[in-house]
Structures are given as structure tokens and as C-alpha cells.
Length: 400
Ligand SMILES: Cc1cc2nc3c(=O)[nH]c(=O)nc-3n(C[C@H](O)[C@H](O)[C@H](O)COP(=O)(O)OP(=O)(O)OC[C@H]3O[C@@H](n4cnc5c(N)ncnc54)[C@H](O)[C@@H]3O)c2cc1C
Image 1 (tube, rainbow, N blue to C red):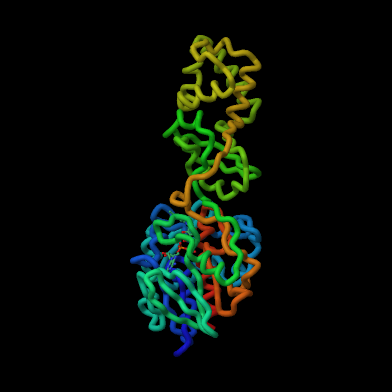
Image 2 (cartoon, protein in one colour):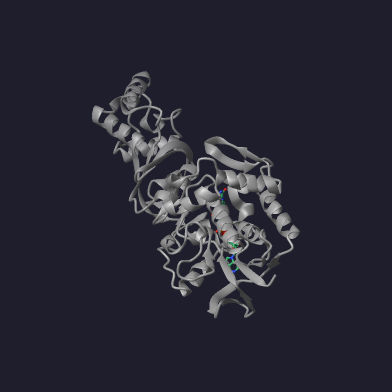
């Protein structure tokens, strides 16, 4: 066995790629991992439970210049194959609400452990760490791989599985983009995704720490769920999840009474006034919203002073209050940083890779997988699915 495959990065996509590459037994496979341990990000996924995949995964849940790029993987190694792959390694899975799949033990560490056990059991896979790759260059038919501390290795084939720039504490700092750029690959603009959204702060700052359930709308996408007001903007699962669809949207809107339509809400407020005409406006919403949220709604509707009695609310003021409750707009000013993001939006342009094998169309025997490519998914197991699938395809092709 003289031929060699180098996998750069020992995360979700790299470990799957290594296992698939070693299967034929024709190659010796080496994983070069920059950190002290393999798969650190896997351990942090799904709040430590690892939302491994989602049984509904299809192009609707992916973004990038060409989300259809995932179809190659969808036809060859997708959700069912991934579940079979992990079941084969010993992970029993559980499907939860919205099709989210978790290991039955609810431990992300179990997912990493079974990958490690498989690698330990596979003679033709070697792990080298810490080995943070700085450059990959072509030397004749082979590749020369150089680490930041000057060590050199060679390989016949290279799979770039370095991740993107999100959550750099787990090792993904964007070096993979530089490596691919050095081979002439185009990298699209990179932005944090699955991240908290920054808004104008005058209102949210005062509500810092308060949570409510709302229907959140960003551009053409909406999601119902928990929203958390923060010093810098909005957070919570619904906001986090919608951040993957930010796409230049200028406003994020909350419907904080989505179970009622506008007419029902208006009637409810009129009845509320009739029942408690002498309650002051600063307490008017107590029992319906958090007191401070109620006060902020009134202020945003231009109703002041809050020392007035509820009965003094005019028809126009009630209409404005209903408008705010049903569509409370916050001007978007950006997102939190890479440190807070779960995923990278953007990456290596996918039209320059074969969707069935992940091999570069520019450089033979060079592959890119996972988050380093211009594919990002919604929250719900879609990103790991992409990492497992693209990793598997590349490994299987390189190792055949
Ligand atoms: C907190 C958190 C929770 C998440 N939860 C979920 C979830 O529940 N479900 C889901 O689907 N997705 C989740 N994600 C997203 C998902 O983890 C990633 O999309 C996925 O791990 C990407 O896989 P990858 O192999 O491309 O990159 P990574 O998992 O980032 O792995 C890249 C590896 O390459 C190594 N590396 C980087 N550069 C070099 C270099 N130059 N030389 C050598 N090694 C290098 C890194 O150290 C790392 O080990 C979460 C992300 C975060 C941050």
C-alpha cells in the first residue's frame, strides 16, 4: 500500500472522509488535525446532545450560491445512509420534533467516540496531531503539506476538511479557504450564520434578559419560538435559526401575540379596557406580557404618559398598539461575531467542485468537504448532515 491520502482537519467531515477513504484498503490515510484532540466541535453540537441530522433534510434547508449542489450527496449518501453508517458504528438514534435526529444516549461524545473507535480499529488510518496545516502545494503529481511549525509531509490526494470560520475556539479559523485559494479556487464573501442578530438597541437594551414566544419574521422567512432580548439585539432559538436567512434583510419583526389575528386582538384589548378602565397604562399589560414588554409596546406605539388610565386610550392608539403587538419591527444592524456563530455562510464556490465526489474541477486529486464549501444549512441537524455526506463522498472517491 504505497498511495496516500491526507485529510486536513479531524472534524465531522474529515473523520467521515477518513473512514470512507480507508475502506477499500488501497490507500494509507492520514488525518492532520490542528488541535490537541479530534472532533472538538462535535462535542459542542446540539447543546452537547449532537443533533446529527434531520429526516427532512433537502435543498430547502440549505443556502449558498447553489444549494442544489447538495443533490449529488442526497442521491448517494444522505440521511438514511448516515443513520445506517452510525448505527453500524454503534449509535442508536432517536428522531425528535421537526425531524431532528439525536443519539439515543443524548451524548455528543458518543458520536465522536464511535468515530474514534472505528479509526482506532482501522489499520490504514493514522492520526497526526497537533499538526496545523499552513499550506498545501503541488509538487509534480504529489502534494506537499506544510504545518505552521515547519513540518513537511506529502500525499497523493488531499481532502480539505478544515471547516469554515465559525466558532474558531474549536479549531476552524479559515485556513482551509486560504489553501483552496492558493489552488485558484474562488471563495465567496464569508459571514457568521446561526448567530444572534444585532439590532438598534434603544428598546432591546431596556428589555435585556426577558424572554417571550413570538412569531419572528426576517425577510421572507418566519419562525415561531422563543426570543430573548439582549443588550445588543435579539437572540433565542427562533432568531438564531432565522439568522441563516438574513441575506441583507434590514428589519426583524416580532408578532408577540401570534395566536390571535388582528381583529381578535383589538377586541381583546377593548374588552380589557372595559374590565379595568382605571388601571394605569404602565400596568395595563400585566398578565398578558412581561410588565416591561407591555410598557415598551405602548411606548413604541407612541402612547404616553403611562400614568394615564387605560380608559383614556383612543381608538387610534388601540390600533397602533395592535400594530406593534402584531408586527414589532427592529432595525437590523448586523450579527454577533464568528465566536458566537455556529456556521459559516459562504465558502469555496461549489461550481468548481464535482457534486458527486467533492473533487476539485481545477486540481485533480484535491477535494473539499463540509463547511469550507459555500453550503450552509439551517439549524436542526442540516449542517452536520452536510459534513457527514460530503466527507463520505470525497473519502469514498479518493479511496476507490
Ligand atoms: C456550538 C455549535 C453547535 C452546533 N450544533 C450543531 C448541531 O447540533 N447540528 C448540526 O447539524 N450542526 C451543528 N453545528 C454546526 C456543525 O458543527 C458544523 O457545521 C460542522 O461541524 C462542520 O463540519 P466540518 O468538518 O466542515 O468542520 P469542523 O467540524 O469545524 O472541523 C474542522 C476541523 O479541522 C481542524 N482544522 C482547521 N484548520 C486546520 C488546519 N489548518 N490544519 C489542521 N486541522 C485544521 C479543526 O481543528 C477541526 O477539528 C454546531 C456548531 C457549533 C459551533
